[in-house]
Image (cartoon, rainbow, N blue to C red; front, side, top):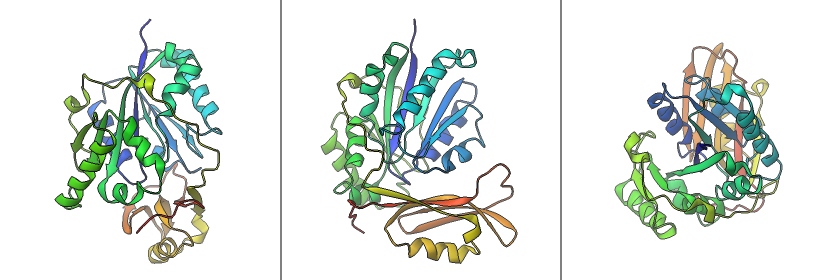
Length: 296
């Protein structure tokens, strides 16, 4: 019996995982691929973004699929994919793990549940942003494990960072995982041939601990639609939040218009949305927790 390949995509908040997946979807529109999106917040923003280009998407939100609270949901989802006739012709599964995930856990999880009989971990990809990567590797250990587990590391956003910063990130990646293939890119762009690599590491050697349900490195908050009256006021709320904000994103309305907001590393990206049909409104904030004391 042939196994269904799994490609796991990891990367810290704001590195460009969702943009990478949108590019992947656009290049594989004729392939029967199932996408599983894991959102750390209870508001599934990434899933709402990707569903604009692909219908074959399942979402698990409210934590990491590799934490003790959600792993059973993830296992149940894979069991459903294995058993239901509607998924029998799936060619591949692409998983976007939450930004805080330790991807090393998946090998143990597949083996312990016997799901490795039906699914094969084919490739692990990590997406990084040079600036946040270099700032946070000293305080957030899962950023290191994401690189350690990766077969391919994409250094994204090379268009907005200096060559010196990108080179420093490249050197640190090779120091952490010398066997990884490191590819510099922007806007999450890649060529399909770059994912077709022969010398994949032995994923069965990966071992990781399931995270606690409440990761002390992170907190999550929601700015409700009813508390948003203007774009500028919303930006002020985020900039002056009581804790360090790693990432903010979501959809909201004000002045009779719809907007999408993304915030990362002091940069705001606010775009007008012509329709918010079927989109949940509100802005999700992922912040430093009690143990994280990030620089910058």
